[in-house]
Image 1: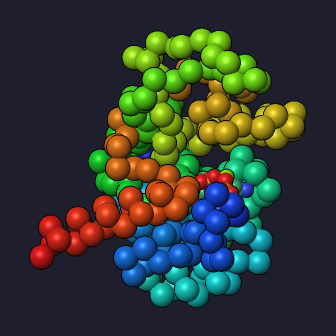
Image 2 (image 1 turned 90 degrees about the vertical axis):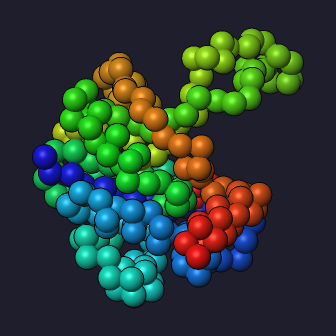
Length: 232
Ligand code: CTP
Ligand code: MG
């Protein structure tokens, strides 16, 4: 089966509160975005489409793709104002393929096993999205911050990426939600909204964090330091 990856890096990183966009900040000597591109370069994915901010295509090409020789990156396209619009642009740029993996460039710690698990599930069920059981109790509150409900924790999952699908299905789902102007916060939600389709959860990892705030950056540095000390 032909596999393509869409790697998202068109966000503004507003919660990081940094001068430089987080995707280009150096983590242990490499831009944050480098790590997920490297994971896909090493994987069985045939092609990578990188989605960046408008006007950042040249920077990415020179400072990341050419510098680190990511041969599988076939296209760099500008994203949109919201994550789901960036995903849509990425899906339009993908070459005809069977399976597509959609990944947040802000998640540097994905590994080959997670990539494989999502692809295998997508081959079998049409979808395979990385997720982990929540560790905290989650509450639903009203607008005044009074608790309304406590959902059963054993049924709650934190969604991660890669979120992997049959290409024709996820593309059709995004066509539909973009045409209707519905916004979604992850790709599984696009399948749910467009087709009411049951999406298959597969095991991600508690290391596969999304680097969102300064606290996450500090955690990411610790993960890198540990990996370095293991190598020595
Ligand atoms: N993303 C994107 N296009 C957007 C918004 C987000 O490609 N319009 C990407 C980000 O670059 C990131 C991923 O989607 O890899 C997950 O988003 P998030 O962690 O929210 O990153 P940002 O949107 O950049 O950060 P923030 O929400 O704090 O501004
Ligand atoms: Mg965001």
